[in-house]
Amino acid sequence: MFLTISTTGTPERPATDLGFLLHKHPEKAQAFSTSYGTAHVVYPEASDERCTAALLLEVDPVALVRRGKGKGKGRGGAPDAALAQYVNDRPYAASSLLAVALSAVFSSAMRGVCAARPERAAQPLPLRIQVPALPARGGAELVRGLFEPLGWTVEATPVPLDERFPEWGESRYVRLVLDVPEGRLTLGEALRHLYVLLPVLDDAKHYWVSPDEVDKLLRAGEGWLAAHPEQKVITDRYLARRWSLTREARERLELVRLAEADDTDVEEIDNAVDEETDTDEQPVPLAVRRRTAILAELAASGASRVLDLGCGQGQLVQELLKDVRYTEIVGVDVSVRALTVAARRLKLDRMGERRAERVTLTQGSLAYTDKRLKGYDAAVLSEVVEHLDIERLPALEYAVFGSARPRTVLVTTPNVEYNVRWETLPAGHARHGDHRFEWTREEFRAWAHRVAERHGYDVRFEPVGDEDPEVGPPTQLAAFTRQDKNATPGNDKKKEVRAA
Ligand code: SAH
Image (tube, rainbow, N blue to C red; front, side):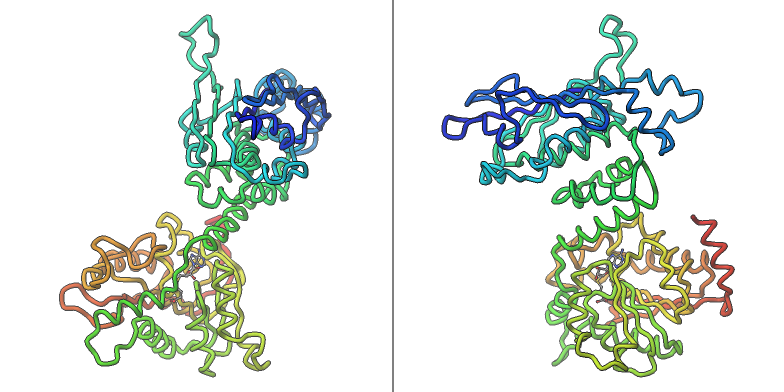
C-alpha cells in the first residue's frame, strides 16, 4: 500500500518544509510499527522546488487476521472465506489500513500542529496526492463526488484487471491523483480528507467499528463534513453501516450544520414583511398572530402538558409559561444555539422554583423517535416541518404521530401561494434561507390527510393571518386530533418494533 504527498515551493518558502509539517526528516528513511504491519516514510525527492513524501505500509496479513478474531468481521466473514482472509488484496491496495497508518504516523500533521513551523501549518499549500491502487467501490464517479466538493482536482483512472487482457475489463481499483492549488487547503485538512475518504472508498473496513469511531469521524470531518453533499454515503460507509453509530453521527453533524448556518431570526423576517404589507395603523406581526392562533387551539384542546417541537428561541414557551393551565412545557430543538437563546429569554437561571419546575428545554432531533416525548397531551410544530429535507419528513411524521402520539398535534407552515403578496420577496424565493420547501394549500392538505390517515388522527385546517381571496392566508395551520383517545402504550410499542 502506497501513497505519496508532494508539494512545490520557492527558495523563500522551500518545498522541503513538508518535512517539518509531517514531522519526518526528508533525509532519513524511517519505519514505524503499527498494529497491522510496518509503515515506512521515505522522500523520493526533496528540493526547494519539489518535495515528495511517500508512505508505504507493509501489511502483515496474519497479524490482520489475528486481530480480527472474535471481533466484528467485515465482508467475507463466512466460514468458507477462511482462506480468503489470508489470500486477499490487503497488502497491495490502499485502504482503510492506509488511513490508520496515516493517522498513526502523521498524527500531529493531521491535527495541524507543527512546533518548528507553526505558521506554515496554518498556511494552505499546493498539494498533489497520488495513490497508485485504490479500491474504489462506486468507481471514478464516486471518487470525484467525494473529493471535488472539497476543492480537489481529481484524476481517477480505472485500473484494468490485467493489462495484457484489456477485454477482461476494469478492476475495482483506480489510480488516483489529487491536486489542489496554493491557497485552498492546509496539509492538516488534506490529511483529514484522506483519513476519512480512503476507507469510505474501500468500503470494507476490516476492523471492529467501535463507538468512538463517531468521535474520530467528527474530529477528522471538522470544517468540511457537515456541509458535504455526500455526507450520507460518507457516514454510512465509514461507520460500516452500523445504524446506531450513523444515526449519532448524522445527528451531531446536523447540529454542526445548523450552528454554521446563518440562522436569521424567523420572527425578524416575518416582522419586516408584515410592515411592508399591512395597511393597519399598528400591524400585528405574523409571528404574534401565529402564536395567538396556536394558544387558542391549545386552550380549546384542554391540554395541560405540552411539547413545543422545534421551539427555536422559545417565544411560544414563554407565552405558555404565563398561563397556569400549562403544568408541563417541554421545548425541543436540534439547535443548541437556539436553546441557549431560549434559556436566556426565559431567564431560566433566575426563575422561581415553581415556575422552573414547569418548563424543560432539551436538545433533540425530530427526525428520530425519542422516548422522552411520549405521554404528552399536545405537540406544536410551529414553522418547523419546512426546515427538514423532504425525504426526512416521514421520519418526523413517525417520531411525532407514530411514537410520541400526543392527543393533539398543531402544525403550522407557510402558504407558498401567498408569497406573491410579499413585495419584498423576489419571485420564486422561499421566505427563509433555511426552508427546504414551501407548500401550497393543496400540498399541505394532502400531506396532512395522508399523515392523519396513516396514524389514526382527524385533521382540520385553519388560516393564520389575513386571508387573501385568491392566494389564501400567509400561514396555514393543521389541527390533528387522535382518534383512539385511550391508546394503550402497548400498541405504540408494537408499531415501533414494526417500523424499526
Ligand atoms: N417554532 C419556532 C421556531 C421555528 S424555526 C417558531 O415558530 O418561531 C425552526 C426551528 O426548527 C429551528 O429552531 C430549528 O433549529 C428547528 N429544527 C429544524 N430541524 C429540526 C429537527 N430535525 N429537529 C428539531 N428541531 C429542528
